[in-house]
Structures are given as C-alpha cells and as structure tokens.
Length: 128
Image (cartoon, rainbow, N blue to C red; front, side, top):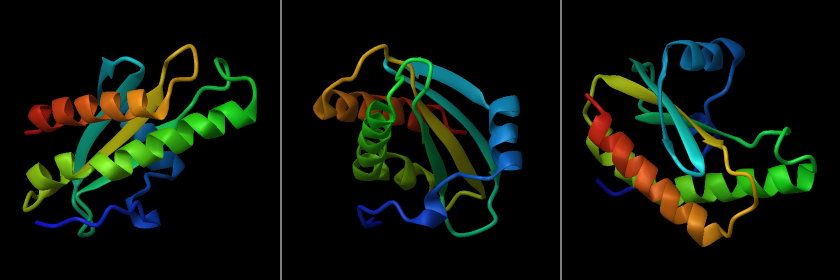
C-alpha cells in the first residue's frame, strides 16, 4: 500500500482523556534519545496510528530548543511512518503512540531520524 509522506491533523494524538489513557495504560520502551509510549485501541476511523511528540521543558529551558526537537521528531515520524502503517493495515485496532525526547542535549536531525526509524521498527515487531 502506498503512503503519502504527510502528517495531517487527523493523525495527531491530542485530547486530555486520550493522552491520559495512553500514559496510564500504555506500554513503553526506550530507544535513546527517545522514549516510546504506545497502546492499541478500538479503531474509530480509517487511520491506523495517531502520534504525538514531546520535548521536556525541564531539559530544554528555551522554547526555541523545544520547538526544534519537536520539529525534528515530527519530520522523522512523517518520513518513517510506513514502517508502522504497513503492519497495521487491515487490523481491527488503532495504535496511539507518543514519542518523548529524553536526551540531554540537542542532536542533529540525521541522528534523530536514524533513532526514530529504529524505534518504529521495534514497535512494529511488538504489535499484536
């Protein structure tokens, strides 16, 4: 199945109850500098996965740095999401995931791209 390399609003994970459920009942693993939290839910629409990205204010005091990290994470997810979408196509559930940046310093985009790809491949293997 061919995927467009976009990250539309419909694929963004948002909403207090949805995010609270993700962190309360989701499973997590670390692929440094990323922490991936995920859970499967009932499929309500045709979207196989919904994602959110986070950069902590505790580690990056300046909004410019947090925004850069979030931009890098969104871009790396956008270009590699077919790793998840291929195994999820035709399934009766939807995946909710959060990509949390836990690194101490800013990293180049190529490094984050590589680590996101590794994390998504690991997540694809963990799917039921």
